[in-house]
Length: 311
Image 1 (cartoon, helix red, strand yellow):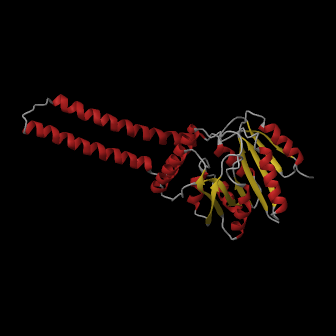
Image 2 (spheres, one colour; image 1 turned 90 degrees about the vertical axis):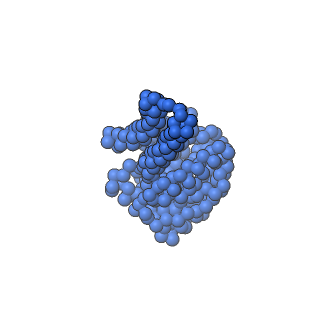
Image 3 (tube, helix red, strand yellow; image 1 turned 135 degrees about the vertical axis):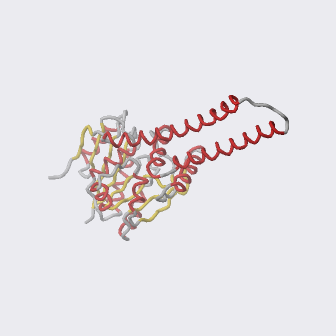
């Protein structure tokens, strides 16, 4: 009998934990023949999420709790769950019901059809207007500029085969942007489309700043957009410089305007300084990313692991 590991990051989800546990438990008890390993990763919650999780773990032998010392972020929580999972297939999903639990049997059926990775793709997003627009634009940019094409509107609701995770572990790959990492490996995959419902309860812990950081990781890790951005800026500067020179020459030759050399140099220096600042920003982003990898700092620190396995 196969075992399916469900990995759920938790950050201040006290209103949703019991409901999510009940929903997953019902699916595995009534609709599936596979065994369940349910891993909740407490990402430094400051409400009573950990107390609720401990209570569930004391009553359900198939529940495992990983608790961080502080908030390390969504991707770190997913990585911790994946690293500790022992299932034949691993499913990552959020705790707010925006990743519908009823799709779990669909993912498993696709996995049984020999797909190593099953992605959940959000067709309809019940998010705010600004988030919809920015997400659409971001995924278009990422898809266009990435060497390995990453489909849009695919988040962290997915199933991956155990062999995929073993490959990641064996190669000691940095998994801080697993959304881009999985397509890069090239395993056989498929997509399950679904409409993303609204959050059941509570507020999202995924702030605008966290979304920007995650987006930058994707662009810096799997896209050459920053390098091409420098090219685009350079072309724009050159074009504007040519227009400026033509304007000065026109005034000089036709209107008998006289410009001192210092004025010419000041204008061109100003343009070049703006260009250099853009390149310095791009270089700084790459250096920061390389620095974090070289330091060897862990993605997360585990405070405690709680499980109540049967003897």
